[in-house]
Length: 258
Image 1: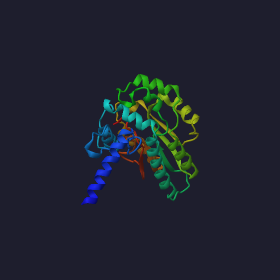
Image 2: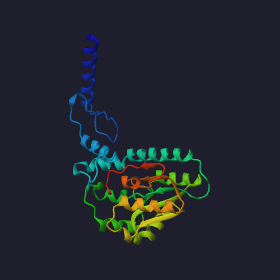
Image 3: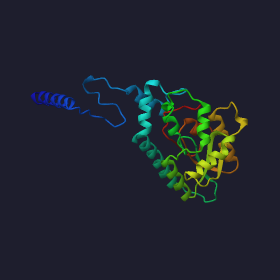
């Protein structure tokens, strides 16, 4: 009993000294500070909100909560976003390496484009990290610059898949009018070859991304392709029909596409 009391008193002294010295223990660089002793934990609701988004429990949202703009920006620009992406890409590679491929050129892997193959983080860093309403005029002007960098983890996965004999198919929600700039952008950052680059035609006007991408994957299978893998940042990239033998979800708390 006395040993427990001594430990608690000692712990309180250490904490008080640490506070006096300005030493604030952090669970993680991108996570809120310790909530010991019932103290208020800043940003905990934003951390929980991001978890809900990534687990597809929070759906149909249009913008990041305004009070979470700083938290999402900190996550996206910090190390954790890259680490999370690396885990996903690594698991995808392990799976791909385990496959017994036929070598007939029909084994394909689906890649989304935005926030999967290419990153729009420079744009979102100047536009509220998703906390501001989507502005199609501004975003399309950004896309037309053709300067989006590659997400390094996805580019590395892409190269490894090609070396295994798996062909890549890009399916993007970008419109056909952006085919040339998308093609050039992909090649400029290291995606030099692919089996197909599928963009959203006018026939899909008013159709959700889930229906559009499911339909295009169905068309691929009708042509004899086997979708051995599928990776994207939106749940609509990897849900629906003909999603592939295995799917992988990259993190993206900046926007939601239905």
